[in-house]
Structure formats: structure tokens, C-alpha cells
Length: 96
Image (cartoon, rainbow, N blue to C red; front, side, top):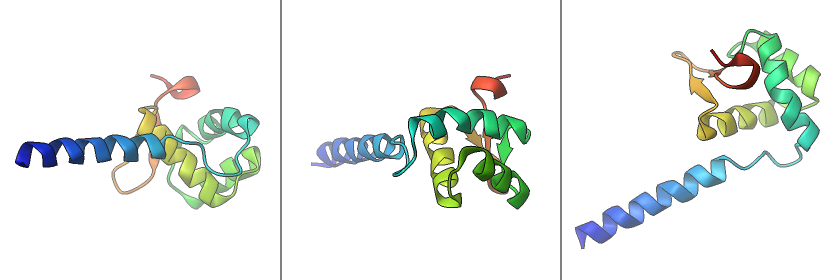
């Protein structure tokens, strides 16, 4: 029974991770494509108000959409959490 519970828990985590990788509602393919470039233009991280505002202006996304795109990048392994909050993009124009 415990083994079944572990398997079910693992499946739940996979479903949750897959759901997090979906693009935010209302975000176009063009906006998704411009997100990485916009984040790169502010130093490859999203943490401060200034960084978020710049990305929002460049992509046409709302704050919520920009935050959700950060979560998508985290879920896909294209970004890392920054200590103290925020993300650092690690792919595309921000790849080391």
C-alpha cells in the first residue's frame, strides 16, 4: 500500500510539473519568443520592480503573465531560483 502511495505521489508531481510548463493564458507565441530577449536585456534575471517593468513593456505581458513565464522557464529547466526571490534565466541569450 505504501508503494502505491509513493507511485501516486510521483505521478501527481509529474502532472503538476507538466501543468507548470504550459504557457500562461493570453500569452502569444510572439510574446513567448520575446520573453528571453527581454529578460536578457535586463541582465538575465527577474527580481526587481525595474526588471519586471522592462520585461512587461518589451513583451506586452502583464506582471502576472511575466511571473508565470518565469515559472514556465523554471519548470523547463531554463531558469534557476535566485536566493531571496526571483529567477535567473540560464538558456538562450543568457546561457553561460
